[in-house]
Length: 149
Image: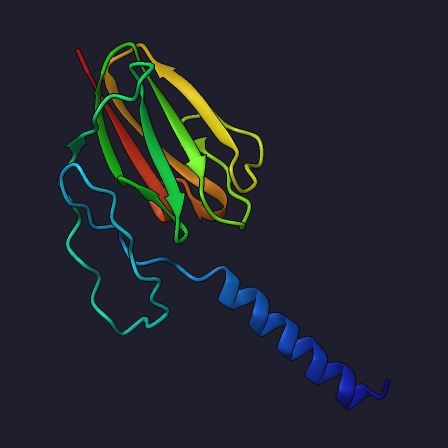
């Protein structure tokens, strides 16, 4: 392969990798219904308003579920009572993690259909992100769990 062909192949590979790591649009939510968000790669487009924290309905086991889809966590902010177990479920084929900003909890890599659960016993605000598509401080793919007494 000559130098020009190698450079073109490298540029195409780089563009594909960068497009796979684009920032998702903020999730919007409707009460008692899961919603889908549209992935937007247009940096000139204004972001949608951030949704207010929600009290998620309890699952059968008394916990709540955060859905991983469209390179976002849904709901983005979840309010629960102390002692609640939250379960994250990866509903897409891209790998993701659930990693606390403060290191208090973290998952291994989650493939499609995989779950990670953590019980929040202490009231406070817990920010988290995906190690592949986000970062601490609400960079990229991230979310928040608010734990109340």
